[in-house]
Length: 149
Image 1 (tube, rainbow, N blue to C red):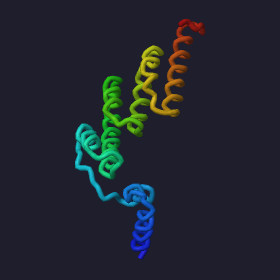
Image 2 (cartoon, rainbow, N blue to C red):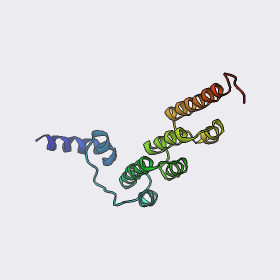
Image 3 (cartoon, rainbow, N blue to C red):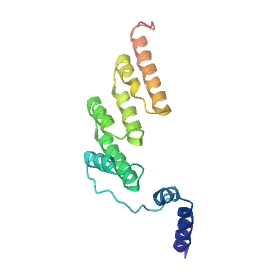
Image 4 (cartoon, rainbow, N blue to C red):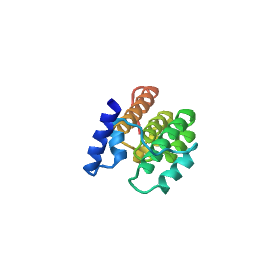
């Protein structure tokens, strides 16, 4: 009975010209489209090939993000994390996670400064600032408390 009521509400929302997939996402209902991608590259291609703003594109983005998060988790070195960063979708959880992991692996202030332009959001920016701070604190303690650029 609850499912019938939900579907009637979905139909009512569709009548307001709201795309069905956006309604389903907002209500936490399963989407009709499915991604067949098994790799980051395949998910990215699905996303790029789908009509802009479509359910297929949204589903491909979600899959691309999920697969990218796996790459970030499995990356161990700064170059591996950097590659995961550039392979992940822009403005995604995976992009932010890879950036944060990437700066955590960098060992110099200059290295962090070089990637600072890739900051994805306020959380990543704060993490980058804290990482520079940590590196500067470590550098000053090694130099007897004096800060030298």
